[in-house]
Image (cartoon, rainbow, N blue to C red; front, side, top):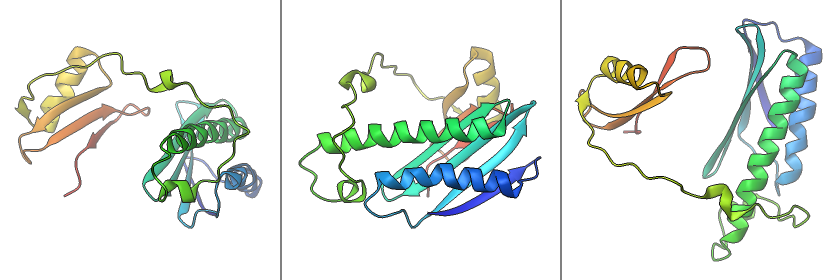
Length: 180
C-alpha cells in the first residue's frame, strides 16, 4: 500500500508517520493483492481533538473512516479498527451475492473465520418522500439549520440537479452533487 500522509494544523513526526503506516498496513491481509491506489491519511487537530481521516479508493467502492481522540496514536488505532469493520461488512455483503463471480469478489480475500454480520445491519426502517423545492445552496443551508438536521436534500436552482448540503465535523458546510 502506498500512503499519502499529511497534517493540517499539526506537524507529522516521523514516529507518527511510521505508526500510521504500520497500523494501516494491517489492512493488506484483507485483500488478495495490496491495493494499488494511494491511501490518503489526513491528521489534524479540530477543537482540541486529534483527528485522523483515511480514504482508500478501491475499484467499485470507496473506504473512508474518521476518528477523533485526545491522543493522535489512539485516533489512528480507532480509525484502523473502523476500517476493518467496514471491510468485513463489505466482504460479507459481497460473499452473500454468490451469483457475482467477478469484480469485488476477486479483489477481497475470502476468509470464513469471521462470523457473518446480521442481515439487520442493513434493515430499512423508514422511507420519506417529499417534493424538492428548487433553491440555491445558501437557502438550502438555512433550511437545514432551521429543521435542525446535519444534512439537507434539495433541487439546486442553478444546476437543476439534486444536491445535498451537510454540516461537517469542523462546523463548516459541504456540498454533494452528481458528477457531470
